[in-house]
Length: 326
Image 1 (cartoon, rainbow, N blue to C red):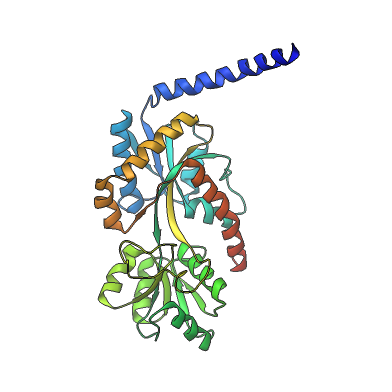
Image 2 (image 1 turned 30 degrees about the vertical axis):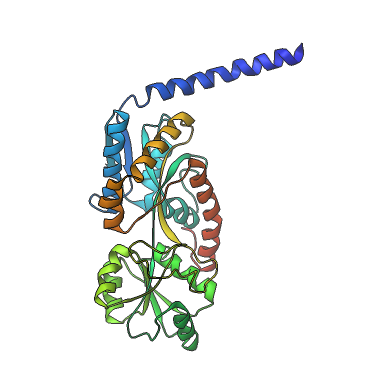
């Protein structure tokens, strides 16, 4: 009898939660959706968000309002989302830079990167290209490694700042190959590219959009891409991993998140709509091909697992590179 009573008690406790989820799914969304974007207007992140927001607005029956809140290594946008009501009406990018690199490089954050957010799913990845100045006598990754080892501490590489994706891409490369090269941080891609082309620095990992013109013109030479698969933009360019550097994989990725505690039916509905849009020919033609993006869909759980897996990896890499938490 006591077992039956206990079972009834548990059922009564569970019913309100189930009813709340069903109700939330049935009425969602009940107002405009905020999509907080940690980037200024006009760039890749903003352009992608506006295109996706238009699709979601049409499918969900409520407008998606883009709210640009750049700054503080994406902490401003992420904090606003973490503190928003858990009703699915606030969305934010979950990116490798914001969720992983920032977490690994900060002493404290006003949120917990795993507990205060609910993943919706992955959106896209974009790798870095390993670039060298044409004066470097290397036409592939192994030749570059041999040349650097024959000339220790004589070559330098550019990045867009300490702790940036470009910096960590090269530090991961160094850690896998035991190379002695000098880091030269810049305040942006433009001055770094100028010095790369002039030969002031000889190596750099850079994104496809920024580096493509210099590669096509022959001003810089691409030796490999940083992801696990070759890119659609340069299918003949091998990855660094397949070029003989085991375990090398670093690609900038973007995903979609909302506030922790949002009912699972809402998460699943958002994931379904986003995946449908990502796989559409329109998205491929107008965004993926234009910006050299690799569309990457996932379940909410797969995105959460990726964040949890990468945080300790890059925390260790940042410490090994001598970067002290701020």
